[in-house]
Image (cartoon, rainbow, N blue to C red; front, side, top):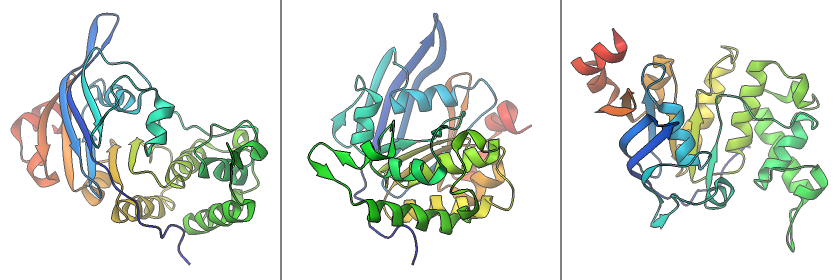
Length: 258
């Protein structure tokens, strides 16, 4: 039995004219971006290009100076991150987010409900709705098995290595069955033996209807995974196309690939 079999009701992501400033310095300058259901889009560029700032703005973790962000037909530009999550957006970040005082298994069960979770008990209740503990546990064990991570199921989050934290951060994002998945350098520090399973999980969730935006410096990951690639430099988009198209783009070569 595979871990995730339910089809996802995909929604589009649209970003228009986004600007992000830090203390008057432009980190993102008028960026446009679209993401369709089932599409995997890579976001690459040199350090300081604005990739993580753009991802944080899309997720709602930082405010934008101007521009519009839409999930489907809904304008979420001023919407809090947790409300975007309720609309189906899930993410990882450059600093892996795991629950240090919970075991890996407990953290995954908590994430089934998209809960920020102070305890396993509270995440099994959302208002009057109650999640079956057995169903949540089964889903968590299946994903751990699928990723080959059963051996750390009972480890606490604060006991994990950096690469293990990255792997579990991705698992926690995927298990929520998001419509839009934002990944910020998810493969950094991950053991090479685990990378194929993690990439397959990303492909699986896209095949089921989720749109995936991935920031990644490893170009072999981008080449093998992405339908389309967006290149940023100095806060702006300088290219948008297939991996082959962007590698043949002279501006991209000058800014990033050379």
